[in-house]
Length: 267
Ligand code: SAH
Image (cartoon, rainbow, N blue to C red; front, top):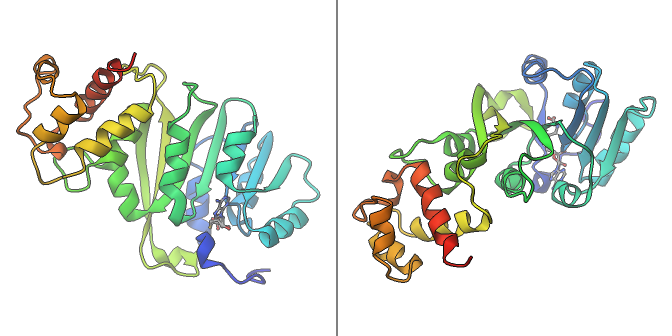
């Protein structure tokens, strides 16, 4: 082929062209007989290699109409491959595709965190997927992997660690893509935590708590915390929480405990 279609920047089209990296990605987990979803199948570089590992079924979701027509053509002989021309966020909302699914994606960078969040903020847990294998821009991966007290620690790592086991696999040079992006990437995988100790009934409450407590990174949390709890001083005591800390000094677990206390205000 290879690039008969001009890549669209607006859709984050940076195609992976390094076969060694593609092989490393598909060897992260067993694919044979599994159901696979690929987010943004693009020109099918990754798709072809996934298919060579004999999945039971593969759904390739691609928002770009031209690319999805192209993909439908190249995979027309495979009855275990279904190419769907849709926005992935829509697809996840509408479609029921079964259980124990593995999701791959060299994610469109402009919506990568939105995609990941939507896979965490699900009502039903454990969710319909067994594993996510995603490529992010390195900066985003660093924020996902960040530990408290570090400069990258924040809402994204708190949300991800709440429900997912996160593993870093390897960095990928920007030279492995066409067109070449400005920065390097990182491949991460995620597995749902089955027995989550922190049962937050409505995950939106974790979002609210972290949004408000991180609204001023440099300042002590006391004002924002007291506002959250309507000036009830007992909550901080019960949590043994020192309100003179800055938000980035709190542990992940403390944020989950705060969210649980916060939602008790409404139930
Ligand atoms: N998997 C291919 C392409 C990755 S580039 C490869 O690794 O080479 C990201 C792909 O996601 C592009 O093909 C882009 O068109 C597609 N895309 C962008 N936004 C999308 C969305 N909201 N839903 C589904 N696909 C999307």
